[in-house]
Length: 379
Image 1 (tube, rainbow, N blue to C red):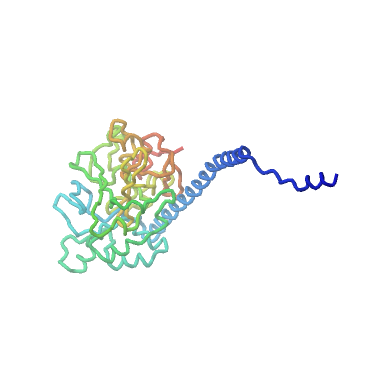
Image 2: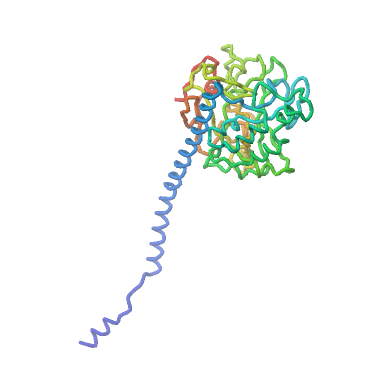
């Protein structure tokens, strides 16, 4: 009896069988598979909240600028209105090429002192003319007027300051600074004749001589220029897909201007449609070699020279190139985000809403215009 009890107490404990181990692993795998989407959704919700906060900070800075200056900052310091397209990196007017006589500084740079970036702002103040009423046309060579109105890229101090990375300008759901192959310095609009509907072009900078694509700070947020800013065109807004067909109500393309455009000085009283009905800022991504899948990102915007985004291409054209077939397709010429079904847009009252790409197409133009006389709703 004692022998039997001893043998029983010395029995080696039984471990897991291979089948049992595989079952446990499978259960863990199922649980991870169920939890992972929830974790990813929670992370994206946090990123969207951060993006919304960034837009509010940018909007608040613009409103504080307006309080201090009784106007909003100019969209971009170039000659305008445009009657001919730009031949390249410098602006052109009917009178000829005004090379190196306009700073080309964009509206976001004017917000620096209101984003607690005074150290960067003082460099702009000391080295560039930021007054929308003056420029360097006719300036004596090497005079202070000529030097302060140099194109920003030819101004070493400004080029250095523009390398500052500003987190408030970057959406956490995107990787704008990873786009180093090319850059989108700014978007332009122009009309070839006073009676012609304005055209919109996003410039691509592929120069690698100064490593600007790697060095310069990027942005995911641009101010709204409306349909196509102000070009001096008297053309009525055409039918879709080239317009919102608001011309049948006597509305011209220039009537659909936004808050920011070439040398704009928009004031709050000029926003006749109301602060809660007018786009202020919105998200942008940049260029994709495959815009349908939002893959192979190659370009993004610089904050130093961004002149506002146009709404010209937010109306889909099913028969057009791939990037125009849906408002949801990413492209540098459009407001766009990496948030799935919509893009965050702020309004002049500094509220922020996720605008669905599937909204009624003409609402992009109606909400983008400051005084076309039609009140729109995103609801």
